[in-house]
Amino acid sequence: MEKTMKVTVWNEFVHENTMEEVKKIYPDGIHQTIARYLTKEGMQVKTATLEQPEHGLTDDVLNDTDVLIWWGHKYHHEVRDEVVEKVYQRVLAGMGLVVLHSGHRSKIFCKLMGTECRLKWRESGDKERLWVVKPGHPIVQGIGNYIELEHEEMYGEFFDIPEPEEVIFISWFTGGEVFRSGCTFTRGKGKIFYFRPGHETFPTYHHPEILKVIKNGVKWVYPTEIGALSFGNVPAIENVSK
Image (cartoon, rainbow, N blue to C red; front, side):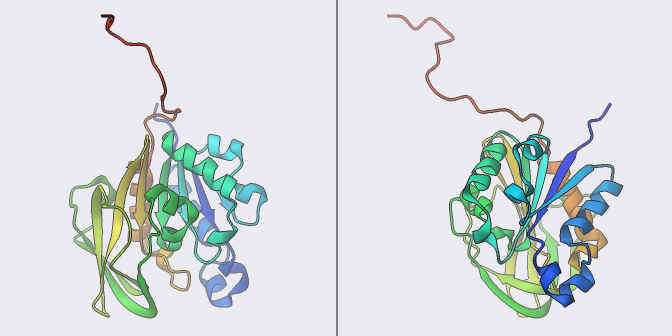
């Protein structure tokens, strides 16, 4: 019997409570919009937000999470370092991580990448085409040559990240910029998928193909096992005595 994937969707959940234009698009929060879709796809989904104790990422929650989805924007600095460290260790042990949109500047993504993860940006409602540059990859299953979004925030190169193991999408914007919008990484036993689109003032997470990519990303980063890595002094397997 196939195991049910246990997913936690993390969101700051600040813009939806303080900006009417965002609340109209995501009245229950971005996290709930994504969670409802994944639940319908047969996953076991819970949510966590910034204002909860330990930001909703207690030991019990993390230990019961196969894949963590992270959406953050303006309040990265409010995420406690000890929570970041717990998530970091959990990823190294095998938990999958899907980082969305402005989560590129989250403490956890920067810690895993080892860089500042800076980029160029512009809020002007550009049209975006996310071109598939890794056809046949599981993350783009069911996706055509590209995904088109009528309006999105522009992100432009240079994107200060380590060389991705795979680039899945490259975006083009009407302003002329391009961006590596779908990238994969491995850290320890954990797999990471960064997926760019999702500015809070646009209905991006209601787009069926964007949701499908997130679902595919969750399945791709899903761990085969979660357990601490082994380090330190060990006895020889063979006889090495002189």
